Amino acid sequence: METKEQGGAGKTAPVWRRIVNIAAYALVGVLVVLVAFLFVSRASGKPTFVGKYTVMWVLTDSMQNEGDPKNGIDPKTYILVEKVDPKTIEVGDVITFRSSDPSILGELNTHRVVEVIGDHKEFRTKGDHNSITDRVTAKAEDVVSRYVRKLPVLTAFGRFFLTGAGLATAFLFIVGITAAMFIPDFVKSSRRKKAKKQEEIDRRVREEVEKMKGQDRNGTPPTE
Image (tube, rainbow, N blue to C red; front, side, top):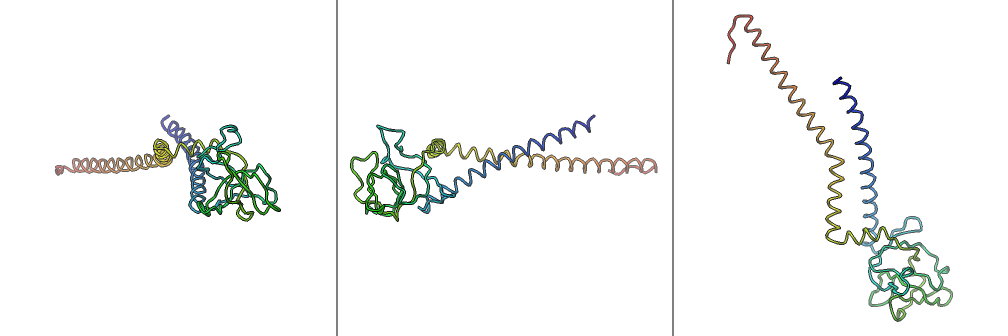
């Protein structure tokens, strides 16, 4: 009976452990890829596209629209954008472009198109929250992407992890995942070492007992 119980437990534990490990590795892998993707995009200042899409972080309130929140973009919001042919851009589109304005020269700016100039050579833009149009037009060759939609779930995570509590939660989460993946193997290895050590002790005890029995049979007093 003892052998069957040990065998049954041995079959169940690895299955659950594999499920937990697979889920943990998959989750950590997704998080690592996402964090690396966003970090590279921010650090380089050059959006990294996957196919025709990428994710961008809108930091300021220039696109906030209190009168029409659905169409506006609040500050600290992640948005999905797509590569775009400047000739397909129309009035009303929200585009991301590399600004030629001396005050933010070369930085990415996300504003709404209010006028198409010439044969889509330039675009006059304006932030929904701003009272006037941008003083410098966006050149067609500086257009990076066109806005598709907001990403509320990613935004919620992004805003949360910007806080102290969010960073602490992220740290504890990573520690917990690491523990779930490695502690069971560590415990199992520790138990094996203890069992092996105990087996060695038992073996030596048996040898000493047999030695003492042999000495008794030969009439030789045991040595201390």
